[in-house]
Amino acid sequence: MKIQSVTVPKLEVRHLLKLVEEDIFNEGCIPETAQHMDVDFDRTYENQDELIEDICNFLGIENDKENYLLNSCDEEGRIDFQLMENAEGYPASSRELALWKEGKCRLWAATYSAYVEEVIRKSFKLAEGK
Image 1 (tube, rainbow, N blue to C red):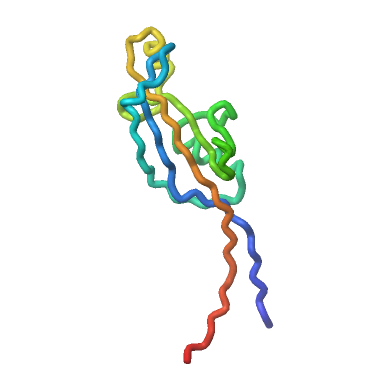
Image 2: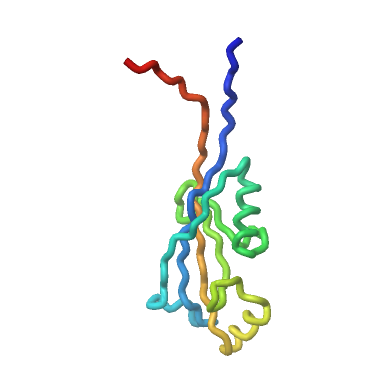
C-alpha cells in the first residue's frame, strides 16, 4: 500500500525588518534618528488572516487595516505594520500619544516589514547510494 503525501501550502515569515525614527508631532520624522534592525521572528501559518492576527498580537497593536499595508511599496508578499513607539520600544499608550501631540513626550514612528512566502512541503524520494 502506497501512502500519498498531501501538500498543503503554508505561509511563512522568517523575520521582521524594523525601521524606527523619532517623529515630532506636526513636523514629521527626523531622518538622522533612523535605525534599522532585524527582529527574530520565524513562524508558519495556515492562512493570511492567522498571519496578520499573530503579527498584530506580537507587536501589541489592534488588527485594524489602518495599522498595516498589504503588498507595501508594490512588493508582492510584503506587509508593513506601522505604530508609534515610546523610548523603550513598546507601543505608545493613549496618554503618551496625547503628551506627544502637546510636545511633552518623545515618540518614534516604527514600521515592521514582514516578507511572506508560500511554502509547499512534500516527501522527497531518496535515491540508493552507489
